Length: 306
Image 1 (cartoon, helix red, strand yellow):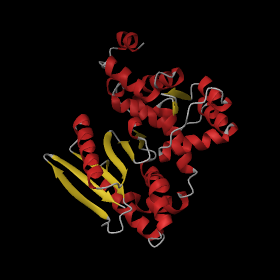
Image 2 (image 1 turned 180 degrees about the vertical axis):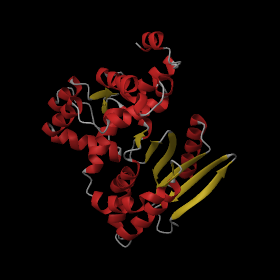
Image 3 (image 1 turned 90 degrees about the vertical axis):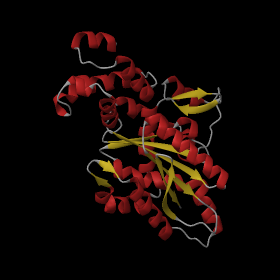
Image 4 (image 1 turned 45 degrees about the vertical axis):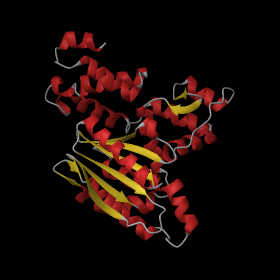
């Protein structure tokens, strides 16, 4: 399809790269593929770009994603309607996305059968997964908007939002600093059970809830599929054409921390970035909270400990 479009319009796009990028967000879901292409080809020039050559880029795709995940359409209405109909599956997907729980594939479960029939979820090695990144991003927005932490964190994030951006760039270091400060106030450090619950169930949800209003309107985030588990979650933020990688980990000792650092460095090499971030939720009573820098050759890793 893109090759035919390019033959007619001569935009100079790399059709293979563009098709791979679109597939990374949509997994080939027809409505989403068509909507991305429609926005880039029919709406973004001259609204966002001067020429089609500028629009048919990775940046143009991310702009289309920003539009789609915030718009009302029949597809997302259908997704949310089905989840409201099957509330137990809605709760399971929430825990899967925010806490890394796995959902067993049950071939006779009517809720799973319905959502699979509509292409909203898939069977991935006998566990249930959301079928594409765009659906995931939309669900994250919904779940974080409903989070019981929204009131306590969104106000704080919005109060500091003007200082988090400068010249179109996010100051992730400062975002982590302010988030850690907020958690020092909210958490009861003398309550061991509350501390454990914070790390196992609440920490990552709280950070994503804090992050969401900061980037809304100008960016999105997605979670690397292979890292969504009980101990690790890698967040990739796309904001005004720039990419930021944050690894969130539950502290499990120095070796796990070292492995996490190496994983972030591998991401930086893959994306051609010079700096990355790691946010650790530590249950160590003698931890030193805060943010500090670690140099790895020509790479800078900025680590925060909650």
